[in-house]
Length: 187
Image (cartoon, rainbow, N blue to C red):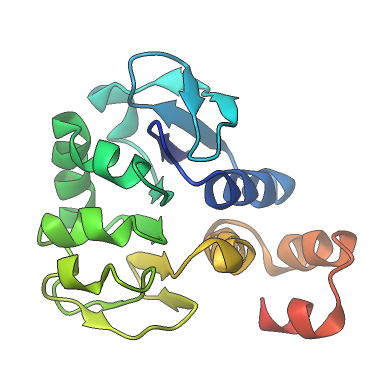
């Protein structure tokens, strides 16, 4: 099971595009609210009903924790002590973590990016302690996927999907989306 963590102020494009692509690829993904209520309001006023509320025990078995960006969503993610504890444990066990836009700052502030090649939204680089910032649209390693912003949401989602779905499924989903050829080739 994969988990997308939602806090009030999350970037809707980054969260919803990722969830949509992963589910189209038949990957089990749950949305998790850290707000104490299932209704989570995005940065642009879109309310999403999360699948469940944050509970450390339920998320510790996650195959991948996904952090969307957006402000003040990222600050709200960082303010959640339970999430910080889970992220430290999750990454120390070498499990996949994915963060887009400003969300890599959460991992940087926790000193979890040491020696990783990382990208993020321009202007957020100062909080990527220990990381090797690249400025690329998407960066991947064995345990970390990062992307630079809303425009990279689909590429970010497909980078995650390739880890959990057969190539044929990912290709089928890309084809069904009717992406223009140059875009499809870049994903």
